[in-house]
Length: 120
Figure (cartoon, rainbow, N blue to C red):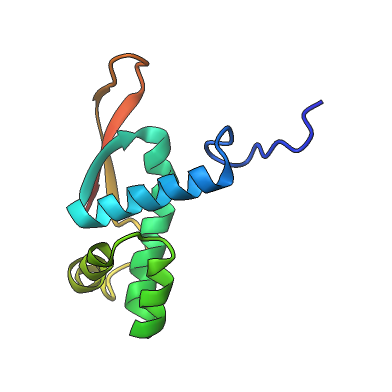
C-alpha cells in the first residue's frame, strides 16, 4: 500500500523544502534573465507561478505586492526586475499566457526534453 504518498505533486520524490527551494531558484533566475533553459517538467511547474506574480504586481498595491513577491523570489534584484521591467509591460493586457516554452533538444545522459522558457 502507498500510504502518505502525495501523487498530485510534481517532483514528489523530493522533500517539501527541496521543492520550494527549486521553485524559488527557477523563478529568481527567470525574472533576472527573462528566459531559462530547463526541463519540461520544471517549466510546467513554474509557469503558473510566473503568471500569478505578474498579476499580483499589476493588481495589488505596491507594498503588499512586494512582500508577496519576496516569498517566491530570493533576491531583491529579481523583485525589482519584476516590478520595474516585466510587469508594466503586461499591465491591463491579459491575465495569463506570459510565457512561451520552445523545445530545444534532448539532454545528454538521461535524454530529458530541454525547453527554453521565455517571456512572450
